[in-house]
Amino acid sequence: MKRRTDLPGWLGWLGRGGLRLIGFKSRMLTGGVHIMERAGTDARARDLLFIHGIGADLVNWAPTAFFLGRRDTIRLIDLPGHGASHDVAPVDLDALNATILDAVTALPPSIVIGNSLGGAVALRLAVRAKDHVQALYLLSPAGPPMGPADFKETIEQFDMPTWAHGRTFVRRLSGRYPVYGPLIVPVVLRIFARPFLLQLRATFTPEGALTAAEARAIRVPVTLSWGAKDGMLPVTLRDWLVEHIPHVERYDPHDEAHSPQMEHPLRVARRIRRFIDRVS
Image 1: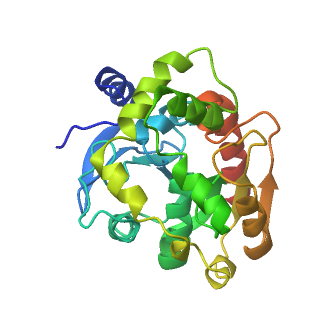
Image 2 (image 1 turned 120 degrees about the vertical axis):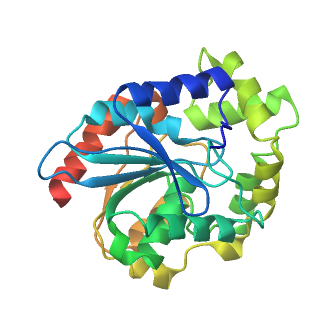
């Protein structure tokens, strides 16, 4: 199995090792997509599928998975070109979505939890693989259309030629510059200098956004969480989703940023648990 991680080697190893200690096992799906999964122990266990954002990997969800406990079947997925998953060819968003679609259709229908790019992938799954998506829990998802200025600003923030650019990125990601920022900046700079991510970003276009007709076709329960401190994506994306997807439950935590599962995993796990219980 391919053993690349977008985290520093020791941190990725530690994260995957920790998941194995609490019962998760690795396997490869169609298209070289890597997942780690653990079967639920409850007779009414639900299937949960977690999808991370660009530049991350499945370890991003490890603390949340820990706090969710063993009741439900949990699957953490590495997007193509991330973590231990294989790259896609050609390197573009269409190929990434198609690869995930093929892989997910081999899994049981699931409640899908996605953040950022993972949220965009989850939305596509809800449109193109309706029978395999039972509900959506989205944290600051990408995917909706943006105006030209917002699109340009969003794409350009991933261009980080200097330490100062990396520092700005971390501040926008976390809603502040954390005390551990000097440790994170070099990791971020290394991640987004990877050829795969450089090529993938170059394929992002406004024309690839979710359409209003596609959004209206999503009929499963949806909760949309958008932290007030999110500096990565324009809040107009949240408003567009609320306007176009039927029956969206909106949640706007005042003290959370773009990826709250990284800084508030227990809190996020509790909210996901309430969502699971409600849609069940």
